[in-house]
Amino acid sequence: MSRTDRESRESTATILKRLWGVLAPYKARVAGVALLISFSSALAAAGPQFVRYAFDVVIPEGRGTLFLWFGLAFAGFYLFRALVEYGGMYWSFALTQQVVSDVRMQAYDHLLTLPVSRFSNEQSGSLSSRVVSDPNALEGMIQAAASRLSGQLVAIVVVAGLLVWMNWQLALVNLVVLPLLALVTYRYQEPLRTASRSIRETVARLTATSTEAISNIRVVKAFVGEDQERERFGEHNQAYVDINLDRRKDVGKMEGLINITSNYGTGALLLVGGWMVTSGSLTLGELTAFIMYQRQLQGPVQSVMFFNDKLQAGMAALERLSDLVDTPPETGGDREEVPVGPVELEGVHFTYPDADEPALRDLSLRIEAGETAALVGSSGAGKSTVASLVGRFWDPQEGHVTIDGQDLRTFDLKALRRRIALVPQDPTLFSGTVADNIRYANPDADDAAVQRAAELANAHGFIGRLRDGYTTQIGERGVRLSGGQKQRVAIARAILKDAHVLLLDEATSDLDSESEAVIQDALDGLFARGSRLTSIVIAHRLSTIEDADTIFVLEDGQLVEQGGHEELLARDGRYAELRALQRRDAAEAKGTAEGERLRVS
Image (cartoon, rainbow, N blue to C red; front, top):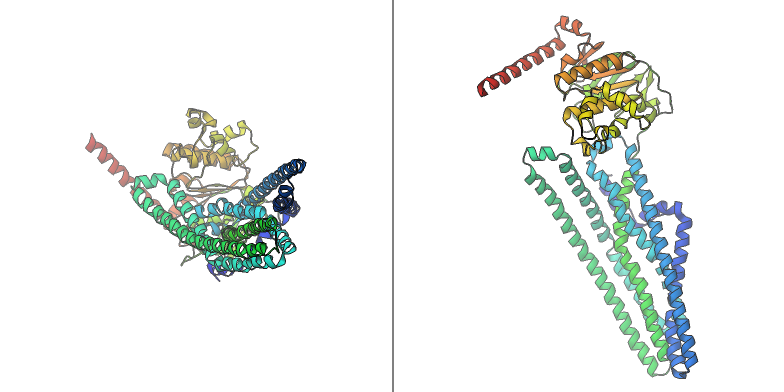
């Protein structure tokens, strides 16, 4: 069953059960707030009795002392009621904020535990919407429930009881309205939930579209894509307007029918009650109190009916949150100690979701501990997939990836990844300072350790030339740094990590030749061979991996050659072919650049 089908079939009872699951940890506070609000609603039922007593006793007798005591009692009662109402309002709001905050944090915590495949199936902006926007709709439902349902349901029971006690015949006129109101609400329940679900999904698409454009603003501007992005966003924005208008039509119809039914009930009460006053079976004070109770009764009933709107919006949000939270997290083993040993792939088959062809086919290779191994091959050969499997971002469908003979799936995920450092081709930096980004690998590292890592990555020099040095704010995704500068910060971050395995996924592709040589020397000499670190280098420029202990040549997800640089050149196989192609391309590029320089001069 698809997620859409599952959502459409979830009953109100199922969603309310989920809501209770959310509120269960706070049941003591929920009960306290409910009692406080219920007490406030019960106090409201005493108000019409003041009016009845004034009309039937105080005014007819006309005694000054009676007026005085009546006024004092009236003022004291409503002051006390106002204090109780304020307490109920404040504590219900505080409870709602706490619940929603916890739900948001739980959703975000779970989001961080999801496997990479979940992130590849949904845009990051849409996932963010589930964590940030959807709990806001849930907030509206919980707050409305806390401030309305508990108190209003009590008010309905109390007032209905008083109406029957005062005059059961007249109460029947009023109570017959309730089934009609319930029927109206039931009629619009499913359309409102369907519309609310569509609104939540459209908000997610709006968020995803804007986030994607903002994250890639340089590409948008470079390709003059502003009109395309405006059109994409405009389509989702218009869809949001249209869905809201359709939903508002249903809400308006429901509210209109509820108001008409309620007002007709009041009219019937006036007609029947007025006839009973003229016949002497009811006093004017009793009729007035009855009408006030009728308004008190229909007020909570209408409030509960209108709560249906908030309820359906909250249910749609809760469904989306549940879909996220119900996604199984990444799983790992219970081994906490990750040994230093060879990294090995044994008969590995791997196919990406929705891909037609496997990325790796029966791949076996072994990288000794402390060895620097290079993976080379044409685009799509499977080099980055190997790095992803070693980092356990994916698991093979067949075969094993091991460290020191132990399958990676037997290790605790956090323990494993603490021993693996990654420098991707496209370095990811966070908003904050340069030091914050280097220290991300080890939050407890002191300034000296951060500077040492930067020196090894050949980053200390350019950092010192920045306006505020290591405390320079680099902006979101490091937009204030050049590509080479971002890469050097990313390498410094990897150096600072106490890792057993270093994954360099074409990590020097954005660097100039001089910086590349310095960093390569630092990694190969000072860092890699000065420890038992196992380095796996995915190289675009073959000149950067000539000193690797072992070079693995991949094609179509299979290992076609392995050996040292000179050994592979002597074989005159695929590695030699790739190197010849790169030298020819480099020579042609150099010749083109030289010709352009001479033409300009």
